[in-house]
Length: 411
Ligand code: NAD
Ligand code: MG
Image (cartoon, rainbow, N blue to C red):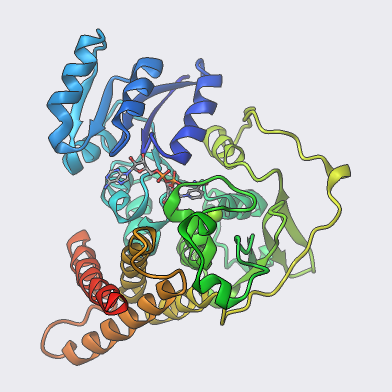
């Protein structure tokens, strides 16, 4: 049967990789809906190529985009803004939602897809960082399926026993002997550079990733290793583990995409060329397999696979993520929000690359103090984050605080 797919964030890097696979398998997959925020020319070209039934654009672009499609004789329902994304995510015609919007902007539609019981292919890690327990509960309560696209999480998923993958048993079930997860990280462009070189790094140096080609935000996150921090939090929620059960190891070749350590000493790893089409194809076809157009790994050409312990002083964002995960959801929401503001300021050349960790740390401290001071008067956020609105409030507060910290760096 043909799977009907909605690609939210179709104009981005994950969107590109997904659509290239879908184009190769037209009998199995139908592109039912697309969304894009910027680069609407590209979205228009995608509409010409895939002829989706529905497309979501920013609210103020609906009329213009609809007129353009009409002129090209394309019949397509154009919807706008958050309501449009939610409408597509919950559309009864949709089987699978590819959640590939970047940042906090992707949270609401991913949650909507979970509530509608969809098969969700999750690239938007920020959704789990901000709303992990809410998201996992919505998936469980509504019979949705969550398959990770993030290469590390997809690798771990592939190395888990099928009973755990399908939630027929818990990851904690001792008879399956899962001891630990190992998340691999490339170390980014500054692995062999000093902290001082990081301090003066330009935007183009920071986004030049040695192995992966990705969107701008995640590339900066890779340079600071905040990406691995976000992935650590993502893994805790996806696999129901404490942060102490997940190790991070730098593996500069990006061939081993992550590992599961078992009690008998076995380490199961998933390997492959660093190409997002592999995890995307895996999740699209799971539990079957389809071709992804990915170059086979030439093992004869691999001279070495290295594994290095991360330097947490240089990559302070990774340390902050562990601390945030320990302290609770308010902290992970605040860290994600602060980081989005700080990365944007770095891209606008307002702050340095190393200021990102500084800003993130200061925002976490302030939010923590504020939360402790307000516990009795205001409300105790800890453990009481039940709705998207609760999350949005903390996210907003953290962004305001982060803007103040950016201003401080500027002065
Ligand atoms: P990107 O910047 O290339 O694309 C982002 C997409 O989101 C675009 O389609 C854009 O139009 C849309 N978007 C941006 N702001 C929006 C808003 N306010 N409202 C609605 N749509 C909006 O990003 P990407 O690299 O494709 O990453 C997408 C997600 O996947 C991120 O969460 C990232 O962490 C995750 N991810 C990416 C990769 C990768 O290799 N690129 C790997 C693993 C995980
Ligand atoms: Mg990743």
